[in-house]
Length: 273
Image 1 (cartoon, rainbow, N blue to C red):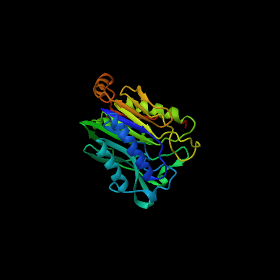
Image 2: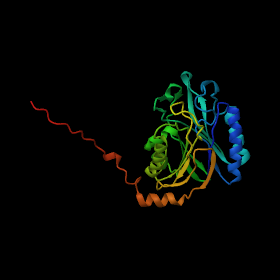
Image 3: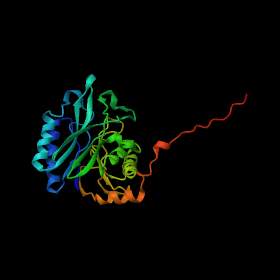
Image 4: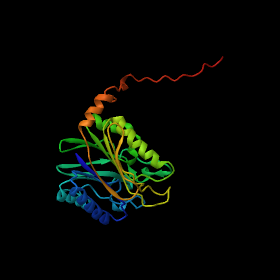
């Protein structure tokens, strides 16, 4: 399967960002990609008031993405914001095109490194695995990368790859963590992991998360096969799906799990009477 990762930088205007998605999807389609993955917050970058611009999955912005997917003959995955209760929004991945019509709401919210996504965003509660050309693909968003259970759930549902959209916050050690975590999650679940981040806009570390670039495609054995630098770029690559079967047969980490027998014994010193 040929996929494309569109490492771009979005701004606060959803209409301008939709034009970027159209441009980059066409470039990916011209290169033969069947699936085109855009970063988290493709609709509007973080640091923008989210509630006023949030739209339902059948609103004009999402319909614009659907038309782009239809016109280019691709499945497009793009991060947007949908309305939620209590004045919040949901951090949503829309996946549409080639008979696909689904979405994923980010489960793990980024309440870390001095930022509180949960102040404005409601958490999702279900995993999503879609099928394109007979291949199952899981969906994940940014901070999800720190939680291996989600990626193993994709593998258990028959996924050969997970598509991860991110807007990874800059800061000391964050690039090292990004690269390590993407590789680890691919190895945990023995699947392809295609992780696309927003390109680095040169923002000051510690501000609202925007992106550091360094999108990468990692094989089911945990090795990096393709990667970008910090600047905007389009990564197009073919995923060898037979390799997933071969790696799972060799390493057997999914088959060898035994959570049903886990018991935790906490040792404590005896207290003298």
